[in-house]
Every structure is written in C-alpha cells, then in structure tokens.
Image 1 (cartoon, rainbow, N blue to C red):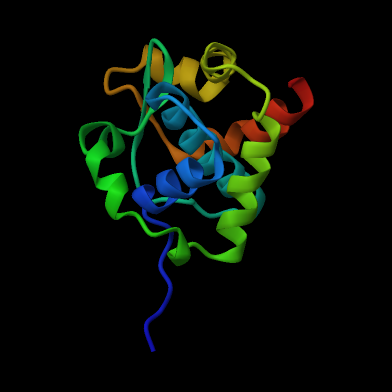
Image 2: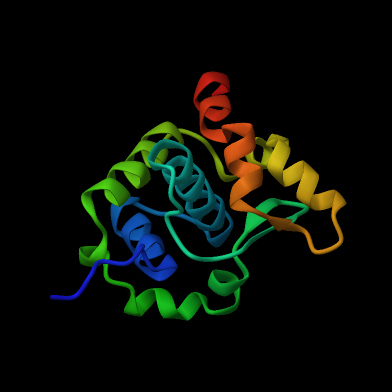
Length: 141
C-alpha cells in the first residue's frame, strides 16, 4: 500500500482553479500561499513541500511560477480531506476579495515583510508558525 504524502503544489492549484469561477495568476499564487499557511498553522504540517518567497506583490512559490503549465497535470483527487478543508477555508475567507486586496493582505503579513528584508527572500514554515499567520488573517479580514 502506498503511503500518502503531502499535496503537490499543482494539485492544490488545480483544485483552486476548479473551485473558483475565475481567477488570475496573481490571485492564484496568493491563494496557494494562504492555503499553505492555513494548513501549517491548523494542522501543524506543511500543505506542500515547496519554498515560498516574498516579492513586492506578496508571496509566490517559484516552482509554481516557473512551471505554471504543469497545473494541467495536477490531480485534486490526490488531496486528503484535511488538505481540502484547509484550502476551502481559505477560499471561503477570500471569496469576495479582489486580487489587489489579497496582495495587500499578503504583503501585510509579518513573515512576508521579514522575508522581503532577507537576502534570499524565503518565507520559511517556522516564520509562518511563529506568527500564527492564519489567526491574524481571519481576525483582521
């Protein structure tokens, strides 16, 4: 029997695209980041095994950014119930937000701000966990 590993970033992105009526690449990147934040802070484990980096427009995953076409091969059926729960929580929270609003929310998060000041711009899982970013997001917005 094959052991379930964490979600693939392309599975998460494809699930978001199938769930949302429409979205932009900018919005998709921030939603994937916030889904990762939600999962790691609520389930105490990363949603995806990827590096996120900070940029002027918030957080982005270089793997997703550089290989966006691979979303076509993503398979949401590989997502666990816990992973889908985390993703749906974020999609519900940001349902009425514009891409610009999501960017501003992302940029306001302490892990993103700290990463922007660092040389490699990496947002680590520890930075996210130390700030309990999801609690901040849901209480503020």
